[in-house]
Length: 75
Image 1 (tube, rainbow, N blue to C red):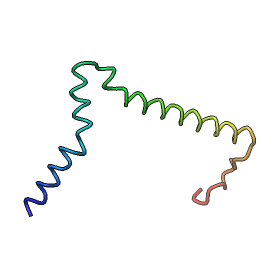
Image 2 (cartoon, rainbow, N blue to C red):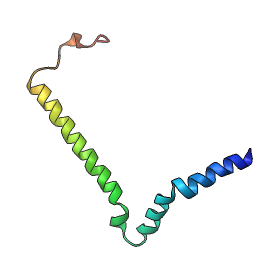
Image 3 (tube, rainbow, N blue to C red):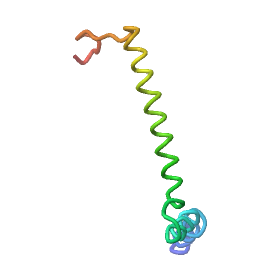
Image 4 (cartoon, rainbow, N blue to C red):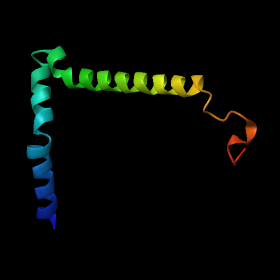
């Protein structure tokens, strides 16, 4: 049973986490290049948040939202 869990640990460290090891080594050379993936995720998040806020504004401008107190059953 111990060999089974050691095999899982070896697989995850050597195969699944290999890209992160390369990013860790790249960070010593160039911080900006190593964090490119983080910047891409932040741009995707900013674009999604902008889209979400614009959709909320569109529904608010069309008065499609029920704003009275009885809009939700738990109120």
